[in-house]
Image 1 (cartoon, helix red, strand yellow):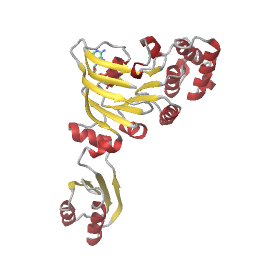
Image 2 (cartoon, helix red, strand yellow; image 1 turned 90 degrees about the vertical axis):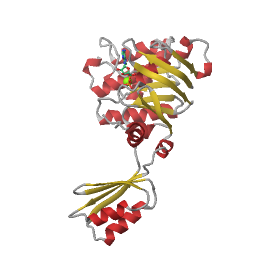
Image 3 (cartoon, helix red, strand yellow; image 1 turned 60 degrees about the vertical axis):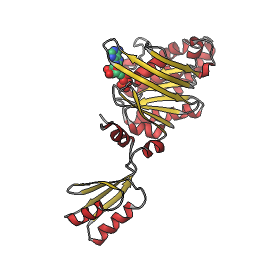
Image 4 (cartoon, protein in one colour; image 1 turned 135 degrees about the horizontal axis):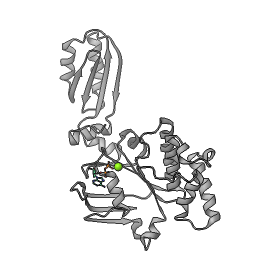
Length: 310
Ligand SMILES: Nc1ncnc2c1ncn2[C@@H]1O[C@H](COP(=O)(O)OP(=O)(O)O)[C@@H](O)[C@H]1O
Ligand SMILES: [Mg+2]
C-alpha cells in the first residue's frame, strides 16, 4: 500500500526530522508508528502525503495504481494531529465540506455525511458549532471529517491525545471497525499501550530513524528481557532469598524495595516457579506474585537507553 525509500527531511532551521527512513505498509493492516514526541512521525506522514517537501526519498502509494496524485488522494483520509475544523460551520456542515472535497454527487454526499456522523456517534450534535463540543466530541468530529468520503488508506496522527478515556476507547474501537471494513490504517502515537493493542505491525522511531520493527512478539524477541516477576511481601525480606534468586539462571536484575521484589529474567518459563519455591522454603510472607510480559517501552529502553514514556 505504501513504500517509503530513503526518506530524508531537514527543516529550514537545520532540524533533521527524518533521517533515512525505509518501510512498507501492507494492504489491510493497522500499521503503527511509535516514537516519542519529536521523533519524526508527523513529518513522515506529511512527506508521504506531499504536504512537506523533502530532500530525498521515493514514495509509492497504492502500487502506483492511480494515474495522478489527485486521483490517489480521493482514496486517502488524513486525521491530523491538530484538530482543524471550521468554527463558523455546524458539525454536519463541517463534515459535508470535507466530504465535498472528494464527493461531487450531492445525494451520495448527503448519505456519506449521515453515515460518518453515525460512525463517530455525533448525530445528536449535528447542529452544534465546534466551540460547543467537548474535547472528545471535537476529536470525533475531526475524525468524521477525515473519513466521510470512505477512503481505503487512512492516517491517524495521535488521535487520542488529551481526551477522556471513554472517547479514547471509542476511537480505538472504531479504528478497528474501519480496518475490518477494509481500510488500511497508519496510526501514530507515543502511547505504547494503544499501539500494542491496535497494531498488526509496529515501527518504532527515534530521531527520524527506525529503531526496530515487526509485530509485538517479534519486537519483544529482539530484547533480552523475557519476563518481569513481581513479588509483594510483608515483613523482612531475608538477604539470603535475594541472593538465591539472583543466582538462578537467566536472572537479569533483582530490584529490592521495602514491600516488593521486581525480578527481570531472560527465561520466560522456569524462573517464576523456582522463585516461588525459594520464597516458600524460606517462609517469606508474600501476598502476591505475578509474571508480566515486557512492554514496547522495554524494547525502546533496551535499544535506545531512554524511556518512551513522557
Ligand atoms: N515546521 C517545522 N519547522 C521546524 N522544525 C520542525 C517543524 N515541524 C517539526 N519540526 C521538528 O522536527 C522534528 C520532528 O517533528 P515531528 O515530525 O512533529 O515529530 P513527532 O510527530 O514524532 O512528534 C522535531 O524536532 C520538531 O521540533
Ligand atoms: Mg506528531
